[in-house]
Length: 415
Image (cartoon, rainbow, N blue to C red; front, side):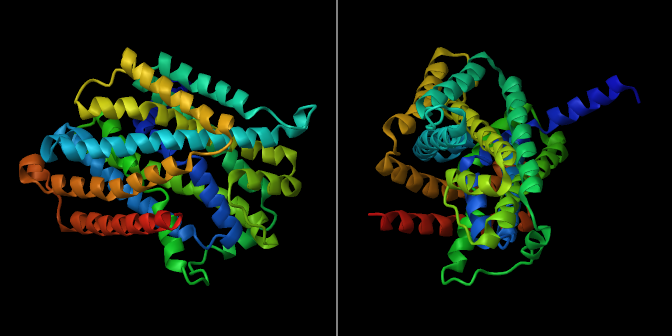
């Protein structure tokens, strides 16, 4: 086989799994990094099996939403409006867009804080690079990419970000782990010896299961042009996506489990892990880890920038032309939100609480609506799912309801 033929085959394969990389970029952000790191530092690899379970649940649902769009030709959000009315669809639209805007603020805050901490030795003042300055630079970069891109261009950018993120986290794992057996011993499934063990596990499983992910999957399948004959390709893409989500999160967890867990050092955010790891792993290793965090942040902020225009277009069943002035203005507004945390030094707590409640409630609504649509003979025809599918999605639905209740109770407790 010639080099050109091999390169062409690799390019075609990468293009065929681009939707999956988009989901990875969106899902593995600074929140996932923090969750995996803090869990690994506190419990070792004890929670790797709930992480695996969450990726299995995610795989089932992204296949379900992708399959629906491939068969019907309609996206999920538009179908909600078409079959359930504008009220429910508008609630879902508002919930996911509002949550994405708040998430954009938080991700930019984490990324700029980590860059500031990492860069302290590089500045004469010892204060590090200004969070405001780095947020302007990162915001300008992703808005420039948005302004000049098309859907295929967006996919390529996300593949680059995800590739950098994956390489960084896997390299960090191998560089910082001093006792591989400590990590391997932790892979034995077990429960933490705490009274709220079930809630901890449920929280870990629910980390990667946001309803917005499944709405995005539907849009990506539509943009890809996949139809009934492409269901095998759609499922392969979903398998690769879910598997890489698991491997990347497990690599971050292992890095913390192999270094911080034996010393009894706990972390509750990314910046703490950077501070704790640097004396243990060295400057070079922590620089690789910071590169992974920045790549994770950019790979999730870029989809955040896209999603509001995408969902608004989807709601009205209009073309997702991101060059329209209205969509560019929405994206500019989203970008400006990245300055909130660096400038004001804190997150708007009340707004975040409201957004979390909306996100928690929206996920079971999204899953239930799709389950109903999948079982409508007039919608799915001969492709109506069987008992196994309905049982699996029904069980996942009950779990999302449980997580919504737990989330609301927890948020209520903050008051």
